[in-house]
Length: 464
Figure (cartoon, rainbow, N blue to C red):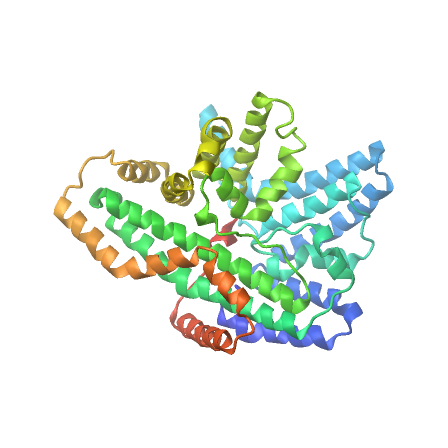
């Protein structure tokens, strides 16, 4: 079940909200936990038991870690928690990848490993680990309420694709939260804006990438493959940003304030700036639990480069167990390191140059991210760089470029404008305006109509 489905909008969410608000406040965490597990079980009827086991194990391990913190027993319990949580993630997500590659390296046939990846496991594993690590560090006291810990880990608005929320961010709201009419209004508006971004923007612009891939790299010219790359860049942004807004909106309805995950990343002037704006909570997690513990930039330039390498290798692997994700991570490692050591300040001073630079880097990086077949990826990137030569039928290729541009130019312009901070600033400023509310209501029903005629609209980040 996804937020942008009629089943969720008109069945699950209304029933859940009725049960939630009909329940006395002190029992709402239990209702939230049960509702979240039901939500997850619709898509993962087997792996929901894995989540329940993970919640129980980490709840009791955290109690033990807090009791024996500073002693060997506490460290052993932390190691056990890490082994359980990351061991599960490794088994489901990485075992097949490493087995195939190790067997290929030693010249043996790899055994067949068919394991279905549980939805959202990368997200909720990181959230669980932040909790037990913070308890071990003494950042905050351990939570003794099982329902609060269970609600924190399983909370359905951000369970599948984030944002990755730390326990101390939502703990006060888990203990006591107040839902106001203004919060409900704003939550509904955020949900509708996110739905619009997903259904009317991401789903529509997705056709551009599909059309380019249908033409094929060898039948496309350089302009066409760049057009397709920008189409995918817009698709993944509005897909993921739309989900995040819907998650924040549902959170508001329930009395929670989730952190923002995006800050107009396509307006960045450098790769470093981009990653301060894109998937903010993931970057924060790697900074707090990997980069800084390794020494950050406090132990010299060489150590900083090594730490950056580790972070981006893990970031690539977090997104997927495939070589293209590792290459994607290394691509950003090289660029971020180069910016830190060479030309980062230049880009900050000359912002126009920085924007042009990022207009090339962003679509190029998303192509690496999207194409898992390395042979196909090489051809696509070579075509983007003009390195394959002219298409066999140059006239046809140019004609296809012109045709697709004619079909999608207006949508690309709308996406470009809406990828800035302008729309959200205007909506936030005028959220009490009856005109804004009427426009959002009309857009909501347009989305409902589109959903009624679409076959499928999964979120791209669900596979991570």
